[in-house]
Length: 171
Image (cartoon, rainbow, N blue to C red):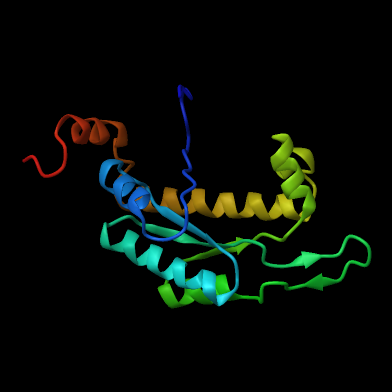
């Protein structure tokens, strides 16, 4: 795929510590990992395993996002925490990484995804769009802070090309 000049490339991986995560972390110079979880304990187990794997391969942990954090009824406005609450924030605290924010369950988020029109485009004034923008800004700020601490950003493409020309373990 030819994307042209990119500011960021986000890669959505399946949960856990599988081959995709390990291979990617070995071949590509990653700027950081963001984990998305739901608040219930069963999902948080995978989060902890995945974050520990990224730590072991020296990928900076940028933080945790809690998805499907709550549902607000479109008819009465009542907030319901279907999958419990606060699990992402507790996991972030336990792992000593930033908690980046919560995303509500909202039919418009799903519908926009199906139409190829993210909620930040379709309904930029909505609270859900604001949540996405806040989370994105927190990630950008974390990357800028990290790059500043390292004296400027690395040259990831050059590093990647060296790895492809000289695979790991070959000298």
